[in-house]
Image (tube, rainbow, N blue to C red):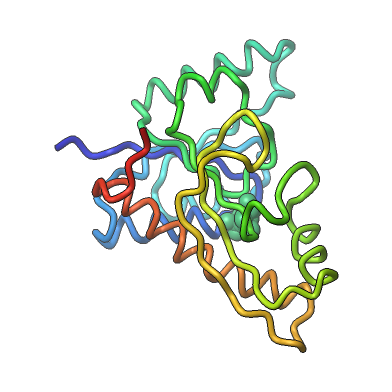
Length: 200
Ligand code: GRF
């Protein structure tokens, strides 16, 4: 069977990107880490891509006069690399509708909370962990879901929980969640590739 070609989208650190690529390289996930796309030319994820030998492209809407041209460039590059699955790993831009249509049920995102709680507009990064902390939750976690037209509302594919201890501050919650994200994202992609999770 043909190996799936995966494109990653990241804006900053790229620790999830690295965890998944390492899992692919170790043979745990039988797919190709084909491409990393970022809107941020300074992102640390590019350093990781260089070290891991994954091709990377800087594609930002600021490079184009019209959003249609930006969208078209994204589509062209994904097409050129024959991408089957798009993995959003800390990508801080909204995904254009044309991409969501073209890659229907083929775009994954990871959210640092147990959706449907603590999702939606403005719920990203430390905003999520601060809200979880303020609400005195005893658990949080991560969610991998399909990307649909609305923020954080696509079908949930898999979740992993962490326990919040009374002494944990928002930074500690963030650290615990990020650690399980790497496990969760890797396992979810493995399940998709081997057919345990069906996307259609
Ligand atoms: C993660 O917390 C993820 O849930 C969110 O963005 C962060 C990305 O972290 N979508 P990294 O760039 O993979 O280290």
